[in-house]
Length: 202
Ligand SMILES: Cc1cc2nc3c(=O)[nH]c(=O)nc-3n(C[C@H](O)[C@H](O)[C@H](O)COP(=O)(O)O)c2cc1C
Image 1 (cartoon, rainbow, N blue to C red):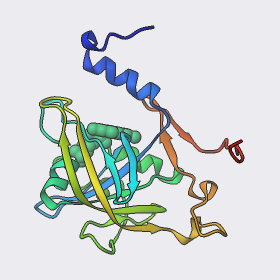
Image 2 (image 1 turned 180 degrees about the horizontal axis):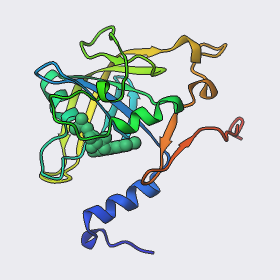
Image 3 (image 1 turned 45 degrees about the horizontal axis):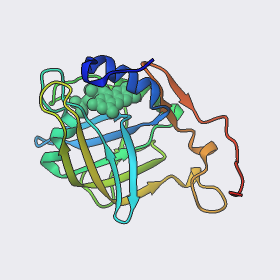
């Protein structure tokens, strides 16, 4: 199948993208609104960018009515956010936090999730998440106006939290202990349980 992107409806293209760019890690983004309400939402258009400067990005599309999602609005207001990684044990709660709540309601309460104070930024992290990246907004790149319009949010990582319980003997996080999930298309997710070691490059 060849897809002519210029004539493809954006919604159909979106479904092709999320079923082919797989598996995707999930950024569980905590933010705080200007009124002080805690917000939490998952974003799987997410990746690390580099270590100099320490950076990552996530991509909140505009809502169907063309307005920015709360995570983007809050990030632009406060200039800070935290990316929490999602272990298998928190997947149900993670999915709940994708609900579109009014800005005055918190997904932390909806999903009965505890917060923990961050070290550098004022936005709290998800207490049971094994890895959290505290970020300051480095750049917001709006790529498209109106409904579904894409945005790139680049954060400078200013502090990183790794739960001691997921560290192995070399001081780095162990994939087995992390047990993070990835997103496939639709409602399908995956765990990283089938691993292989390619060895040294020839
Ligand atoms: C696993 C998962 C991944 C998601 N990834 C994205 C994404 O990359 N970009 C996006 O705009 N919405 C994504 N969503 C939808 C948002 O989480 C959803 O629109 C949410 O209500 C946004 O919340 P907010 O308005 O509090 O920011 C995803 C949902 C789920 C369940």
